[in-house]
Length: 420
Image 1 (cartoon, rainbow, N blue to C red):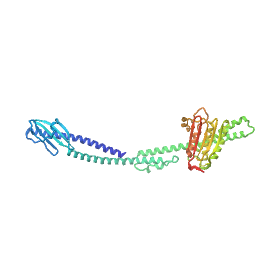
Image 2: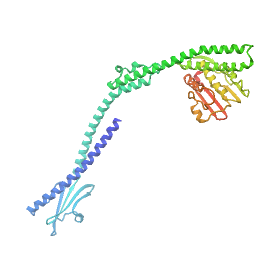
Image 3: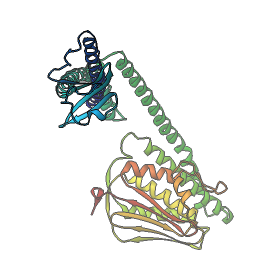
Image 4: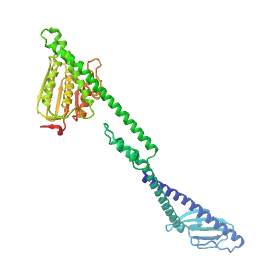
């Protein structure tokens, strides 16, 4: 930017000097010729034989009104009207003054050859000196600006390299920054430190609350689930209560899945300890758990298809929560047809023939608490949790859907995470 500004300044100076020089040259030459004409007229008034002006660049001719006079007047001059005329002779600019005086006509011709050379060299030297001055000022300005901006640039680079979980505040200490650390840089440093501390405190409170709330809810939820299991397993339980107990068990398992997801997302690092696990076994367990949701939907077929048996390295609990949420969604929105879980070498697909989604719903499907139909049950958290877990675990999640035809959800695995 400084170089561009310097070049533009030099060009502007050159244009101004050239324009002003041209105007000054034209005005000075015109005044010089008129002064010669007045001097000749005054000389002739005192002495009729006064000679016409003549120098290396000025030539004059006087033609008396009575005829005769200087026969060396160049051809064509006699046809010119009185006044100043710009001529070009042999490639050289000339200025000719034709003036009627007492007793005849005066012609004064001034060559610009010498004037143009002097003006050109003067312009060149002026532009050269101006360029040197502008270059020096620009360089000094750049050095001063760089010294002022360098600590801010260094600070920005350090902030960009920060780990959000553990930002290195010492890296932006004013004493370790290069260049001139002024009051503005110190204020910015203090603001960044304050913002970082508040952000870390907020994240810590959020993680602590989520973790503690999830643990506190687990205890009563476990009591509800165990009680429902015992009542359902009791042969004296009336058959009409079995369906209600099944719903209680299903809701308890869904809530456990949500609490597991909250606990995983509350972690600062990867979602759960990394381990090797069989994806097919997890998928089979998720399918069996999801069959109870279809107890009231005999027209829906749920099937697991094994095309490969990959071993993944990552958080098995995160994958289990993702599969549970995705299958719960498929079971909830499929009234008839099929739900197929296909395990492939580098991905797992969950396909259903449910209600599907249009483009407008697909754009917002991963938003927390979003439901396309507010009158349909559900919390609107299943897909949002699955997306967050997929992003943190490195398993991309993709949804393809057509309204009225069904939905296909695909979880892809990076090649480095697949163990054969």
